[in-house]
Image 1 (cartoon, rainbow, N blue to C red):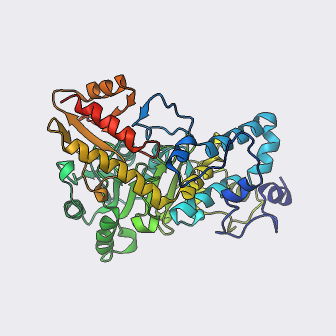
Image 2: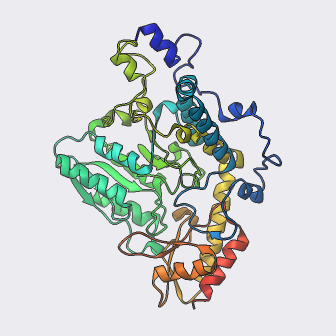
Image 3: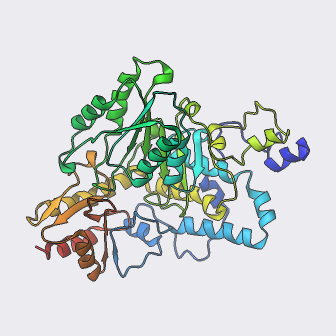
Length: 443
């Protein structure tokens, strides 16, 4: 392919591409020109009942496990269907018309939500893919070590184990709490500090633990790490890496508020994004410590075929670390609508709503003598997951009892398993109270 042909197809000729780092057209502007004949009335994002109406989720059950895999809200479902129809009618033409702008638009929407530079956002298919890419690709010198916790998901622990087997990297573990209900900021930070050694290069943690419902105080941990790193050379700084999937879509924060170096998350849980989508955000200088694992299909291909110079500004950390290949583009290209959906409702209102419903449930559970709750009461140390036991009932029996009353709950998929509720934007106070009443019957 000649240079001019590549530039034309890649949308890089003068006047066809945005300046580096500039936001691509917003999701709102892309939707403005469409007409939806099926929507009975405009969506009112200030109404929680209207929010619930955006989902085709059955109303025959109370959904207290919707964080496992998202039901798509109407704007996301419509975007997926629009892309699917385009690909089905004429895949080559549809691809050619949209591949120049689709992923930049998605990165722009994510960047707006996270308060991040879109150039530093890579697109993935899941949290697990992001964890594998980061923990498998971090450059470690001989003797440097990784520190993690026993509280994370299998995907984090196994990504680190695979890295250790492949390269011999040493992985150390520290428990940041013993009784999750008694977790405190001081305890977490103190234990973290005590476990970091001169050899520690990576701290790998999970923001919200699906095993207990504990939400780590990331900003406090980041502040302590800044103090530790201030006495180290840049190449020896501890990199703060976070599985953020059960905080993303709940907490009203930016990446700067979190203070981490890498954030990996699926977008098909609390964000209500298309199933099979995710992201990696990395701090500008942190990307330098990460080697790509899967070849990209971004502008780097243009350099390879000689159509772009090696120093082209179109190559960014986000593009280099977005795995290439042909993905489920009807889903990936609709990710931006999920982030816009949250922005339309308001990040602050979402946080207040989910925390409010969870506090309502936790306070009621805490008053029951036959229930032991493992999740901290404080919203500063918890988010949208509540883990608990009921005397004389196995967690699976509790879930079955709830299902018999048309309430869908879950158990934690860990060696030490608990019953689990996750009140979300798809619930209301009445549904929380009905769920609590059903648990009270077991006493």
